Amino acid sequence: MKAEDKEKLQAWFRDRRITEVECLVPDMTGNARGKIVPAERYFSEGGARLPEGVFIQTVNGDWPDVYDAIVSPTERDMVLLPDTDTVCVVPWSSDPSAQIIHDCYTGADADELHPLAPRSVLRKVLALYQAMGLRPVVAPELEFFLVQKNTDPDFPLAPPAGRSGRPETARQSYSIDAVNEFDPLFDDMYDYCDAMGLDVDTLIHESGAAQMEVNFLHSDAMSRADQVFLFKRTMRETALRHNVYATFMAKPMENEPGSAMHLHQSLIDERSGRNVFAGDDGKPSELLMHYIAGLQKYVPAAMAFFAPNVNSYRRIARDESAPINVHWGYDNRTAGLRIPFSEPDATRVESRFAGSDANPYLMMALTLAAGYLGIQEKLQPTEPLGTSAYDHPYQLPRSMEASLKLLSESEPLHRLLGERFVQAYVAVKRAEYEIFFRVISSWEREFLLLNV
Image 1: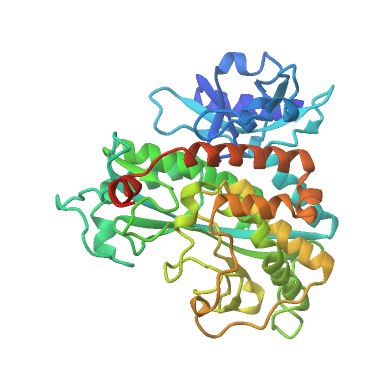
Image 2 (image 1 turned 90 degrees about the vertical axis):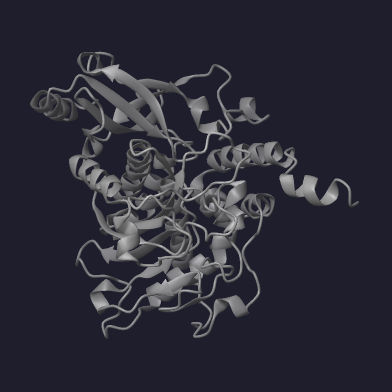
């Protein structure tokens, strides 16, 4: 740890009388791994350590068969170094506690970012833009459901009861009263977010029963990925304290819409501070067209990151408020890529592909990577669509198996993200798919048991 970082954190700990530290590392799924360390020991051990194998563990706690081909046979440790910009309190802890997101390093002097860490992948993509003199600015929108506690996975999820004592039975898009049903819960959520310095802006009720959306203020991509990562953790904890669950599954209930993580993005010229998505005449620039075309070309191969779980593909369906192809248009919410109406300096593109179950670091990395490739290759997009994109054929893969095949065949993404990282990610997701495919569903028992 650098001396200035150590002094900064020590002062921060003293001011808040911190007694323990949660050393957080986002894993492939986007959940927190790490260690809890007494505050007095945090600075004396030369940095926390974790085995690199944590990055190829599946969501069900298993490992792929190719583990030994990806991870060092010696199970070597990574050195965790804190990003001091991410330090914040753990507002729900009974003792004064801090949580800090860490980067993972390797090499003899712990001077190389570990290639399997999602934060490392995003840093790698951002460095490509920095070399061009550009800085991405993003604003994520994150949807989720509140549901009744469900301790038996064989039973379907159901909306929880609010203050009235009754669960929602009708869709309540943008309803203020429907949000007010959970005022005590959201009051705590905002208090926690304020204590942590999370830039949560708007809260709205989405179209599903007890489905909500939070919008984050726009800023740099790494800080927004960090904030989504921390918010998911915070929202789950808040919900539990009100005896319900908060779920970020892409499609948690059969007859309700899916949950998305939309990303508004623009590029700023570092030297002038100008939004390069707008031309001198205030109209969309040629660079924006290249960027859109890159997304159109590479999003299908990147869908394994935007739809990272077998459940994710239940959301990718016609007329389900989720894109099924890579069309783009002006203020067209049926298209996967939407250019909202705005002033020229706020010109941006909204990517609507990712589910709320996506890892925010990898979702942002792959979105920006696709746009970068479009700029580098000077691609041209299709004509903007002024009608419903649902009237056009599917262009996105509709299963994890199909997505992984496209990713495996995309040499430009391999080159940009790193071969070892892509190999690890594909191995983890294939292992998860194979485990899922062994499960016999209730639909199969109901309709096939005695009918075939």
